[in-house]
Length: 128
Image 1 (cartoon, rainbow, N blue to C red):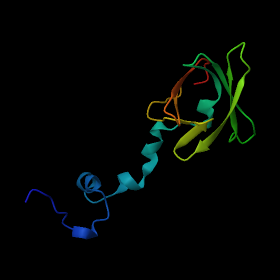
Image 2: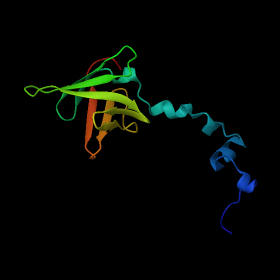
Image 3: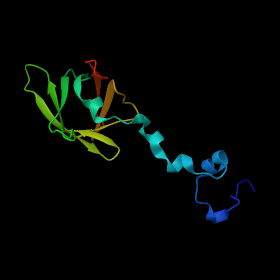
Image 4: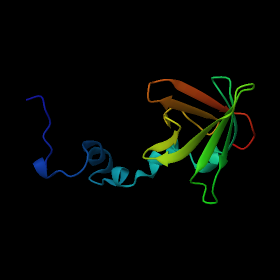
């Protein structure tokens, strides 16, 4: 008493939500195009940004396929910092930080470093 048993028992191969909503169709889970809503494309990263640490950030492609990107952090009189950017499972990595897609958009990027520090980039050009 107090719990629901699926009519198919252990033979159930779909989520309960899909079973209830789609009357047996699991199309919501099999077609995961909705996951791309929060994704950031290569084109979204390229261009000029200002970060929350006072740097001007310039992202450019290092190859014709645009799979190797570089971010240059500039804050005179300090020497420029060059960070490699690359696609990783679930998003992008820049230096030792991973892009937090839950807070990022085409105009604002939230990077979370391995030690928990956050750097926020705001687009300063009109590319978005």
